View 1 (cartoon, rainbow, N blue to C red):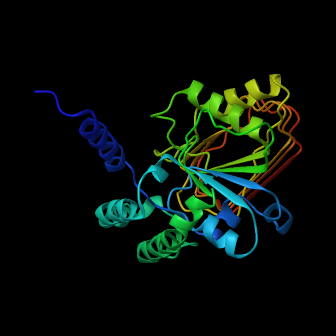
View 2 (tube, rainbow, N blue to C red):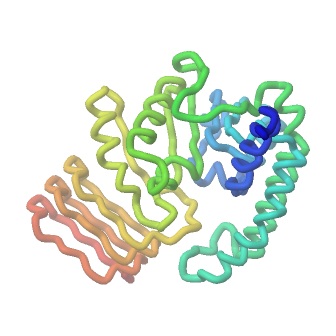
Length: 290
């Protein structure tokens, strides 16, 4: 006997929620991850894949304008909280069991990480129903969004694009970033690491494709780091002239193809081997406590 359609849809939706890890981040973390200035905060912002972050709620209380989109917003507050409670113990235990994979500056420890996530989701849940009514939390997802061109001044994407490079295709990433560039005048994405804690293999090719379309891009370091970087591949960034890496826990770095590089400063990393052959314009090299 065939199940009623509404039952099949409900089962499908709950299976989607069961695959979600609803860990949200705070306004303070967003400011560090995206190097947000007061001028940035004054802009109209769209936040992609926000989940149960407290960023929207905290920004709204402070008088700023943020719209958050995430398919998780199809669920009720109780359903999101229930899923958080179901997975938080396991996630924190995984963190404790991999001590060498984390940098404890902000937050300070696995326990502090848990406390931060619990505080973030509590603030989010208090704001969630009101925010949905006000149109600040919208059930939507990439690669296609229902906004007009340049509706926002700044788009932020946290822990989604590039992080899931092993699960989401190159075309999905490229089309998603094109869409963000369509609806916002500026786009910032964090982090550039995959779940395996290596630089996403899509970055160079996506930057190249966007350049051909007249969209410029740059990569810069921000004062927020939780996952350690084990392998950095900077090959094919032929226009890069200056490289500064400080306290990144990097153990290996690939400089192939950086023919215009003329200054390197590597400080407080864990680099054991750097091949400087093929860098004809290199004039300054600084190595300190690596």
